[in-house]
Image 1 (spheres, rainbow, N blue to C red):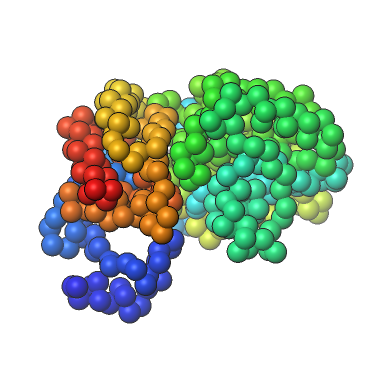
Image 2: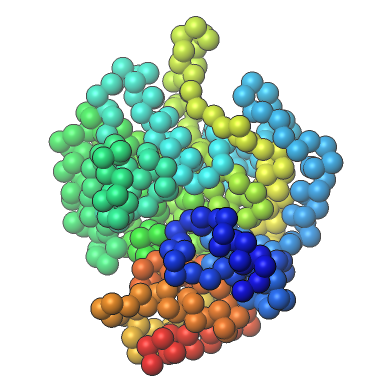
Length: 424
């Protein structure tokens, strides 16, 4: 164990990590699709540094944008002030977002982007005189973040088991994954027809539920759910924290079903993994409900110290330009290579299922009693020069959208070897 590893074990508490059974891997650098440890070993970053590294590490255009902005302004509050990077990124986001979304509220993580949508929806209905609309509908197995509001509209049993007494209760409908979605839509319509008077919004991840284990929805589900929300005057909150910025093959996943939500929650890829940044986009109709005299106290009471941090916004603006010019076209080409690679893995003994949407995929292993197979595979694959993370017995692939075909092939070879070593 190195000096840094030893110091880490003595002073740190890592997220989602059982530290009694973990040895630190110290990352010292990055280069394109690779992370580099303190000893100089290179690893394919197979999960895009938790799904946010869109263009690879140390991209010159993003490094330049960060340095240029740092020479002007590192930070200024956005409470009552504004600045050029925040303004220009907001305008650029509106340009590429589904038509009808016209306002951007910045925050710093996916959880806060969702929290903001929940609070804005809730306050909107209060301002419009419909104070009974206080509940939210969510999908089974949903994940929308780790703050209490986001956990409350999630469906991860472990979180509810631990934190249940702290949570706002939500209304669950079954996840449409693995079905034609008809039963989920029927229950959604039943809930909305009976309880729309008390429901503020439906919260969904579009096309695929990421942290639930890469659960892919049937085609048409999102579009039909959006129609039901419109019919019953219930807001639609679309959480594109994981699916946004090209991950599913289009800029935003909801484009694929021609859906404009009332709220669009963005984070992760928005600043390409450089700095914390998130945004909640909403419609002009929602925004206008909050307007009035200062003494009316109608404005939205929410904010962060680092809301619209200029460094993050400058990188976000450069990232969005790069995504449109280079990275998204590359991702669209690599989807087919990734599908081919996953088809080989799907035939391996012990692989129960493979699920893919664009450049996000889950490899589900048949469970074995007393063993954490997903963790074992992710531990073993490091010896093959790849870093992956698991969701239970699901091994996740979320490589940078800039990944090359040879790098995808190397990812396939390493994953196959690690699965074979684990199950053999």
